Image (tube, rainbow, N blue to C red):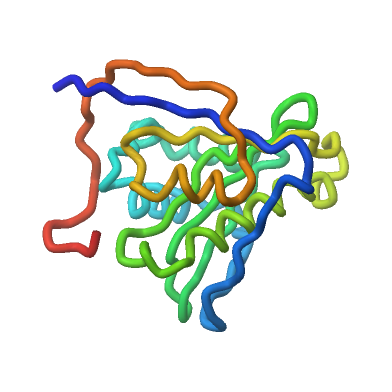
Length: 188
């Protein structure tokens, strides 16, 4: 089955663009997954993206996941609520001081709890200071991401509230892909 998908690309060009959202409570921690783990990253990817049809990484081999996660300037930051993974943001350094927020989102049971704004704020701040942790990289000059019409209904608003501005829009036909989640009866 073919569906029409609109993809919006957004960016920040200065750390001053970030308009952070406060933490929703004391029980939320955001921690960098410093040891690249294909198993954990694939779990996060499937748990967050299953109901919104993320499928581009599902066919990757273990070795391909390892390669993606081991690249200099690639970081995964995970939000935990009361010790349970709630969502994540994956950063990827690119040429010319650009950092892409490759993946960002919450597991369905944690959506609507004001975690997303804070996790995005934290991830964007880590994108801006990425070169401090990776001295071989150029300092960040731009943070960018894309979102699409398959993402949650609050995604675009969250990006705009955090200070991102739109720089490109594309409309394409896609084949709808089967994804691993959520399970029938899961929160969402």
